Amino acid sequence: MNAIAIDHLTKIYGSQRSVDDLSLTVDEGSVCGLLGPNGAGKSTTFKCLLALARPTSGTIEVAGAPVTPATFEYLGYVPEMSALYEKFTVADHLAATKRAYTTFDPARAAELAATFKLDSKKRVGKLSKGQRTALAIVLAFSIRPRILVLDEPASGLDPMFQRAVLDLIIDAAAGGASILFSSHQIGQVERAADSIAVLKGGKLVLRGDIDTLKGDEKVVEAIFPGDAPSPNGLASDPRVRRIERNGRILRVHVTGDADGVVRTLDALSPRTVDVLDLSLEDIFLGAVNDGVA
Amino acid sequence: MYYFDYLRVRGALRVFAIILACVTLLLCISLTFSHAHSGGSSVTIGSETVSTQDYSGLALLHHLGETTWFPFGLFCGIAAMITIFFSNALATSLARYNGNLHFAFTKPISRERSALRTYAIDLAALFVGFLIALFFVFVPFTVVGLLGRLTFGPTSLAPIAIGLGIAFMWYGMIQAVTATMRGGAGLVLGLSWGVFAVMQGLQNLSTDLVPEIVVRSIHLLNILNPFIYLNTIFGTTGGQLTSDDTLAPHYFQNLATVWIVALVALAIAVVQRKRMEV
Image (cartoon, each protein chain N blue to C red):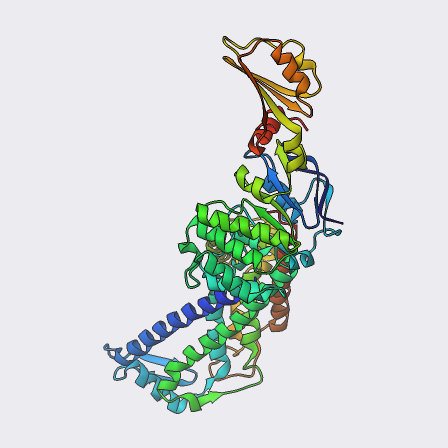
């Protein structure tokens, strides 16, 4: 069963199509990183997923059922912007969460608050942006949720606490939790996620397992003594996703077997030809720039 | 998030009690040291007329207390009036936390139930506020030893029901208007005073000046005006300080109206919350 199943979700605000026919599933016990430039529709997707906004069309299921208040008994959420109560203290928030959930684990909450060095007597209004994010994370993880939806969970945190958040995500996933999280920091996604989904303009432009994507995607880089020539015939090759010419450098982005492309470039007498593995960042940028699904 | 609601009303009640304590203290000081210096000044309460020339305020009350009985309903009415002011401090409780909905709406409780809990806590706070007000209304009275001069009648508690009803009606209407607002709820609350005061002033507009339809419309709109019902509170003493036997005219009709308006307004606020997008 899918932990999260989004089926043909569309959300329109006025004339703005924020999410456009998005279909996405997150398997039980897996971690999916949701990537996309600003305004790609990630937060709107989360809002629809959590019933904070009504989809214009499409359906959403969490743990095999539509989202109801009971869903939140086992779903933890960290919003992108702080939604905490500024006039109340960290301890008040913990107390409120304890009263709201039957699954609240006080020992876990205390442990996490200590990890993020949160002063329980401090009012939220006096906390820094990073500390507010940390408190939201503490509250979300202290109910030991089966499903986690995290919208930029490391936003505003220093590198040490970013690492702590990543460890929490990995630990939760190891414990069987299903996680959908967004981040602008590709390195975090690469470390924590099993798969990624890339949104652009509200549309899903890339979806897949990270290892598979990285295994399939390669860059053939050729450096010429003079300006790089135009590689005739390569553009029509179905394996070629993109060609970049930059002075003496010619880069060809390839899906699958790169041998044929290497042979074609070799015929142009370059100084060197190398086949490079793509990083997740390359894959993300490629998807966002191409808009190729 | 009812725990935050609990913390909120606890804070509001604390401030309310402190303000009333200060006002009561000032009143007691003022009564103790105030004298009527000009000759011939007098006060009439019930059938008793007393010269104020040689009395401080407290002494005057004490003197009156030797011959005058004080209806318990009068004190309940004053406390209820004060509680109506207090209801304003609670009236924007839904809008106040509309910046926290990502937190509040992702908890295992329905939006409707959450709003109803907020109402229940606020209504309980209104009642506690009434008791606090009643306590402070009695303080100066008790200080001069007049507690034994209280009278109780069949309508002594009537001001509580109508007074809290008016308070809850005002609270409910502000909630209905502001339930989905992200800001400006305080402005709506402040403007409501002016609107209600003006509408009350227009209640007695003559048909000689404006068409009858206008007058009828004003009367109709004033059904929603808390100020219109204030007379019902003190009318329960029958206009007589020494009486606790008479209900104000239309008491039960007004009582039903204010509570129905309150409940309908609160239901409207709940529906808006349910449909609200974050």
